Image (cartoon, rainbow, N blue to C red):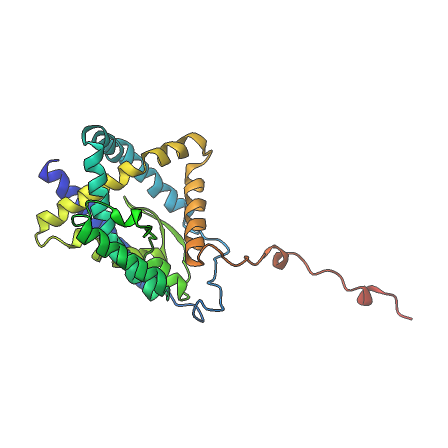
Amino acid sequence: MKPRLRRAAAGAALAAAALIAGCATTSVTPAAGARAGAAAAVPHNPDPFENWNRKVYAFNDSVDRAVLKPVAQTYRKVVPSLVRTGVDNVLGNIRDVWSAANHLMQGHVETGLNMGMRVLTNTFFGLGGLLDPASEMRLTRQSTDFGITLGHWGFGPGPYLVLPILGPSDIRDSIGFIAGFKAGPSSLPESARGRNAVTVVDAINLRASLLSTTSLIDNVALDPYVFVRDAYLSRRRDAVYDGAPPLENMDDDADSPPAPDPAASAPPK
């Protein structure tokens, strides 16, 4: 890939991160209490910016069809499967460090220690993460991130957002993305050229892994925007509550007029 293309892709990702920071620093407030014993509030309308989000979604879809998807398809055809697996393993091993830290911050000590052992195993016995012996030792990957950690401790998700290039998110996950980006693979190289190269490889690897998923969405969803939004919000909510989210309050009754009081309507004696 040409240097100009690498710089452009990295610049787009960083610009999007800057946009996230501008939104996130003013919009997130902690819930009344920690997650223990209290459910994080779910907005009645989680997508108040739907008109704007649909425009960004259409822009992202155009960029994806014109650039990202063809590059990912070429990567999948040209690069041998063994090499692609190695790249995915190395990037995943770096992210596992951040997952282990977040599990510990969420109070999941056992899971955090297991993820830490996974990182150590793959780093020392898997040639720096190129191989994945930890999975064979049943140290399975249990990914999490800082957005989930914030939700675990009572931060509400805020409105749903579709971010340029980056795709579906919300206010809370936007903050989590910034923290994760700084702790991710792209932060390791010392030179700007190295960081840009890792950013591009990471983006291509991720897009290649989603080829079958996006094809399924195009084939089965009547409204892909709604399908992606609802799936994203549901998946993130499940992750915050470890797969067992509380029942949502039904607000429909609050909009209905109160039932008449039989005593008030009875004729006087």
